[in-house]
Image 1 (cartoon, rainbow, N blue to C red):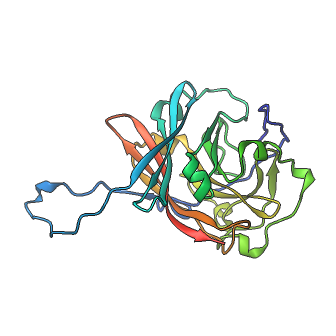
Image 2 (cartoon, rainbow, N blue to C red):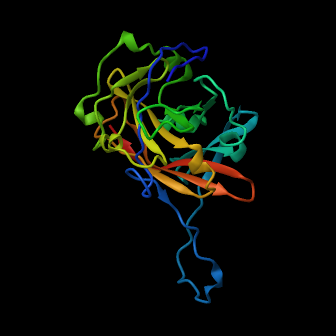
Image 3 (cartoon, rainbow, N blue to C red):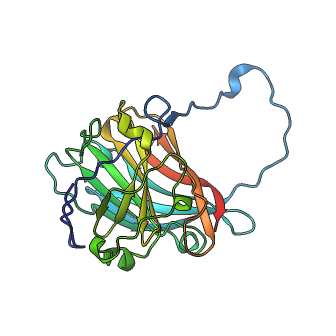
Length: 273
């Protein structure tokens, strides 16, 4: 995989993997819609649960269609979810058939997410031919949710710091990073992924100077064309390095048939470090 954006580039074949759908690989789970109220059975009374407040973030475009970020906070103003909404067309029919590897979208998260969580901004990359090893050679998107600021990530030069993460920085089942890409960092994928299987999606861990620098859902177009909600568990290491922050342990990709949109929401936050 070669980077050709203005942010600088080193050519690299990114041998990534798939770790989330229960239908294949290690973990993508299709989420069924809740039962309707027509069952004739009245639900038990339950105490009211206060809905979180949504804070709108930045807006950008991916292949001509809008993409917007948001965060949700509870009554104590603690972040409980961070997400991005995409038009289905930008993830399928509008994605170009010939395309260099580059940052196709750079989108900042809301200020409260930057302050409280490991999520600073998103860089979305479209790989029209995928990359090795098999079965990852089909068209897919890399969604890098990065910890550093845009300027800090732009300054990453792989040859400048080759420190690898220690064992406590790797979630269970992940291997030592084997590939580094400038303006991104070192990539680690689940060991089980390289054993093969059907590619429905993956969660890649990213590192720089030995610390976690990004969380990367990697999802093929074939998963989006199913128009179904799915979720991806996010492995949590013992330490991410750096200051204490909130770390998501799940991403839910919710399909909305009325708007033809997918919303990626990272939630189930836990404190790390």
